[in-house]
Length: 268
Image 1 (cartoon, rainbow, N blue to C red):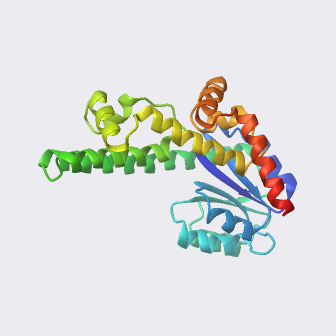
Image 2: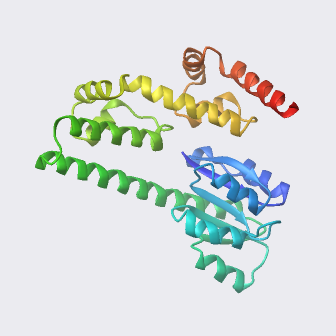
């Protein structure tokens, strides 16, 4: 699931985009809503974002000023500029900073959904190409004998961990990962346990639990079933059981503890 950051100084536009676009059905999720350009850059410095919806005129830093930084620091990020101005000068500046789409307000939901769909297809292709290239390189090295034994096992495990970091929210099994390296799932499980000290399923659950807690902290308004879906669980009840086994508390209990700690820190 790709993450989207929405930046607009008008509350009704921010909330409208979050509410009326069918994010889930497009395999997208709104990671955060912000109301000025400085907050955009602050958020990007600490979080990974795939798509940026950006108002061109905002306080502190304008959309164009934000895009100047995004263009140099986050070149893989896709961006849509939202503008109340049809002035060619603004569009020209936006295009020079690699903006994917320059969209005039009032926003047409059908149009923006079409644009987001095309962006997602592009991101899927990029991600797939990177995965395929990395796996082909590893397989060729294994066949040529340039990496063997311990180095070979470590390389496979390291790449599978990297893959999990980018796909933890997807529904996949051992077969899909083992097939990427052209090895059996039994052999993959064996070397993963040898290299990490834990089995693959335990590791995957651990990654998903860390991501779940991060979502709780970043967006206290998210419902438990939404968190569950965003970290790769199709059943929220099962997610709650795994969470309890991992942290000793159910998600709601853990969230209340986080809120209490935050309030205590704020009072200091």
